[in-house]
Image (cartoon, rainbow, N blue to C red; front, side, top):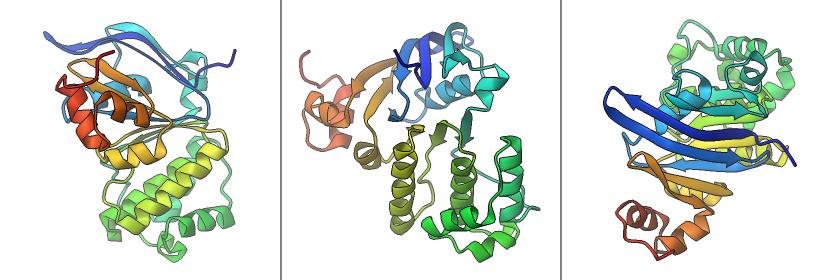
Length: 244
């Protein structure tokens, strides 16, 4: 039996009297592209913070590749890209990538970095410039580059398409598919449900502190009684879905 890339067992998180996550359990398998869906404010960020060890659950257990998420070995298996990615303004793009790879003890190979930049339609020449000169889309591409190049087996991506134009989004999707083909696991959160439907093997819908659906995007459409995944999602959280 293979070890889960990410295992979440019965986690509970509250802020004071307000319950945010209520007994959630989830298994994400190695080599899987897994999506977390939910409206703003439902607890997606809290869940990600709990996975990263930035917020301790009140109850429950989270393991990464079979070990507790707080262990040093687990932290080196996981790379995270936040929604609001803002690299140090005083570094150049290449300096930031070198810094990120050093944290993970990953080798810096200039030709590989440049090839990955080209894949994302980012001119390798701009990596010599300070990030304070970058547009939002360029900063996002830099964050994706640094995250993917760590070689970590588990990637946590929060709104990875944020600030990207359609061409760049297409390139990012291609890179994520390549990461999956390497056997690495991608756990992503996004409000662009069409992207989730296109990329993810499975998704969960988080609403009112609980998972309201877990399965394939295609089955979500069937369960939510709509060919449009956004409408199916809304039907699920509003309780207008197919009988079990």
